[in-house]
Every structure is written in C-alpha cells, then in structure tokens.
Image (tube, rainbow, N blue to C red; front, side):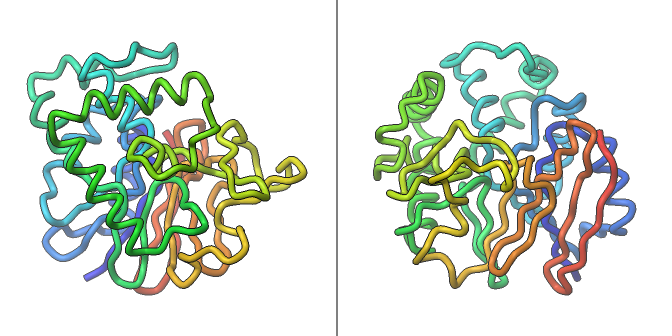
Length: 265
C-alpha cells in the first residue's frame, strides 16, 4: 500500500494516465492525494474530474483556485476568462454530479504526518486552525452561502484588494489557502508575485520561510506556485511543476519520499 501525492493536473489527463502507469497505481490498495487545480488550462478537465470522482475513498483532493473558478462559473458569479477551458465540464451531462463531488473536497488535509493545502498558510495559523478553517469553508461551499462566498473571493482577487487578504473571515482565509505565495515583512500577503524564488523583490518572503511560522512542525505539501517547479526544503514539498505549460506532472510517494514525473500535457 502506498500514498502518492500528485501536483497540479490542470486537465492534463494524458500525463496523468502515464504517471499512474509509471506508479503502477492500484486503487484497491493505494491512495492518491491531489494538491488542487485539477481543472482548467489543459485539454481534458472533464476526464480528470470523472477519474478523480470515480475513485471514492482511494482519493482525496484539496481545492485550488482553478477548481474554485469552475465552481464560481457553474454558480454564475464569474465570467469566463480568455484562457478558460471549462466548457466541456459545464456542458457535460454528468456536470452536477461532478461539481457536487468537487465542492465537497476540503481546503486542507492532514494525515500520515503531512498537511496538504493548495497554496499557502499565514504564519500565525496552527495546524488545528488550518483544519478548522477548512471545515468552516467547506460547509459554506456545500451550502446556500457558496455563491456569496465565491463571489467575494473572485471580486477581491479581480480588484487586487490586498488590504484584508490576511484577515480572519472565510473569504480571506480561502484566498490564503488557494492563492498565497509570498508575504511582506509584516506578514501581509503579496498576491501579485508569481515568479521564482530568485526573483523575489526585496522585502518579500516565501510563506514557508517566514520566521516563527506556527505550522513549521508539520510537513506541508502544496502546489500552486508553478515557478518553484518541484521544490523541497525542510518541512515543505512543492509539487506544481508546470505540467500544463510543457513542464512535468509530479508525484511524491509519502512512504519513502520518492519522486516520479511524466512530461505534460
């Protein structure tokens, strides 16, 4: 039995199938964790969702920002973006079943000594706080508040209102968990930075290197930051290796920390 954590798939179903073959994945014995962004930008989001939702308890995924964008499109609170590739999902006969499965996925998952999220964490959050926020936000996404919550997140992101990005409300916490990469020295998020570590502007710090981070005792696995590529340092594993733009799709086996990759898309 093995547990494989796979980076941002973004609809790259071909690379995913090749990676699963390389892993010799057995859904009767093995488990898959996904760091989010299952959909969008790649050619086969519908196939990825059908595969993921078919695995039942053999798979868990956290939600990424592109997954939230799909849910927001479905609920009519956001318009299509020029690079969206979501119409096959939105027009599929099993759309409602697939999106109901998606909205039931958590924002954080903790097991086997690891904490999995999509993007980042604020320095003063404990593991317990992260999981509590995940539960609170998940309940909202599954309820009548889903449209209002997603509309607030998408509106704030579009206008780059960063002043309250680091506050405690559900929409701000959702932005942190699905969009954060770097912080300034006052622990305020800098959502506009998307580049590699060696291009960080003065005064910005990767969220995972912020001093006295309260989740430093956890092994955190995340995606989202494609410019990091596959990246490891003490306590963190980053798995978005930019598959959708011609990079690699990466899997990390928890039991022995072995890395597996297949080229995208």
